[in-house]
Image (cartoon, rainbow, N blue to C red):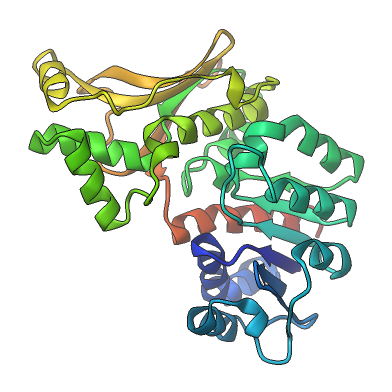
Length: 336
């Protein structure tokens, strides 16, 4: 199976490391010879129809910051041209999230379908804005579209609902879908520290972004809720349809008061037939949704299986790449 990787930042490098680590495992278990025939970043691409040397690609990126510097196989060819012209079975789209426009990821995904490639993405932006449009392109060109890594990192929510719980009606989904905000609220609760102090510490530790707006405002969680609403509950919504409130107004005093009453405060995303919202909620201390640190958790309310709860790491290069790898394997097995 030949793949093209678009985006060679933290997630892209994680994907390459996971493929390197699992290459023999994939051959032995699935008979899959997984080759990365192109890696793209803003500088251009490295292309080799026989499969790139992944260790060398990582070294070039680390030393120069540009995959186009890859010896002999490096090129300044624009990403869209790589997608259109290089023969591959699938593209893995791992560029930074843009919740405002969904670009350039939206274009890469569409061009992937148009050129006859399956698409795997970890990118929330285009899915939160153009889910049904992207799905229609996939159907039109008879390609598979997988996006498990876009919600909850390593935590299997989408595939769990659509495959393992097939036959169940999903009535409601709610949970903690942002590890940064969960870390901040957990730290505030445990150490009685104010929001700004904990945010600064989270940024220094690399848990929060330099610009944490999408996390703390609830936008990141809202994007994920939209993806779950559309992909699992067959709704037709965008991020503009979500009622959103972040965590910036939460104080240590509010958390302490909640604790005295047997509760904690968590940033909860929730979707049901009549609800699409993100905001701080009182959660009982003994509730399964009361997970700590940077963990994520989702509770799926179903008609047959009742409540199904999944907990996992919602971020991280290797963790997110594990979800991407599961999507690659799924596509391979469906086309075997």
